[in-house]
Image (cartoon, rainbow, N blue to C red; front, side, top):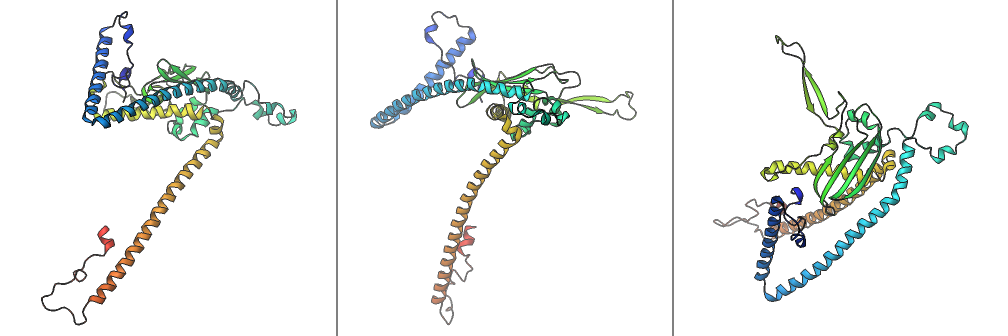
Length: 380
């Protein structure tokens, strides 16, 4: 799990030593600087001790390998830089397409194919003609995705029908990305936009530092992340009114209240830390699914084509696993046949060696006569 502010190990942001002459460090920054330097010195000391333990010839070879690794790291850094620039370039090219999708889905403009239809066909079904855009577009798309479907309850669907658009954007300081969910005016909450921001320590791994969600301004009695329980008072109780209790419940909108790493996470026990890490991984999985699957391929998820494509990939993967399993079974069958042949030969040899008149008095019984198990039983 990532430490707050990136920790003080390999992932810590390096200090610019040239700035120390003019900058005035706070006590917290000074302490962090000391920790960074200590860790760097400890790492260098550990590496130095290990290298000193090697023979001179091997040490030179390892040094040469380190130089090769440095060259690789420089190329990798350029790759990540160029990839980010390429993604930014195509993100701009996608924008006009996403804008057209938004307009058609929300009935701002009519699709060209509908415009070109004869007026008689267009007016054939008055009720259909009254429907604007594509109803429940984003709700249906998300429900068709396995990861998101698990998060959407029946109670959520009424609010998600008002979802107009979903967008995402990369952020640079700190590194990460932001999701934006745009809603029409609705009876559930006041917000027109709900956002979810992911701050990454290492965007390329990726390593999540923390996630930040929007505080939803719910209307009274419409909080979908809570349920109200009413219990009847006990018989003979002076209070005749039912007892009301509020509990948190499962809802897609919990996505905007993500799990947080406490300031002092060192005091957490192992089980709590593991549970928190699992929750953060699940939260990131939902966010990356929206970013990488739903937003770029929304209509395919709406129609179900994306579901079929994923199912097909899963079937192909299963078939590969089955083929491997069949090969293993064939090998096992061949081994069993070889064992059976060995047993038959062994029994045949024993029958040839066995005397016709039986054992002499005082002679030891053979392994076969002692009831020795056949080879396959030994393996069990």
